[in-house]
Length: 76
Image (cartoon, rainbow, N blue to C red; front, side, top):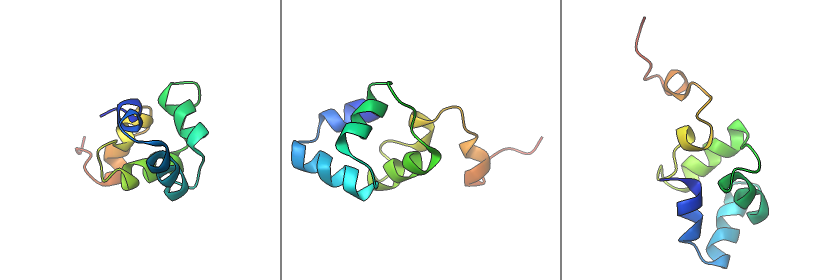
């Protein structure tokens, strides 16, 4: 699921709680969700963690080699 789809399903309090748990603001989450800003690696991980994997790191930062970091990359 995309971050935008995920946050659209949240009410204002839930969005604020998600932002606090991710150590950011609701505004920053919206900026990332709408593609106006890029999430840091730390924020991508926090979103993945706080959404219980519903919004995976690969969605918010597709440019990073998450398979390698997760230990699921295939050997060459």
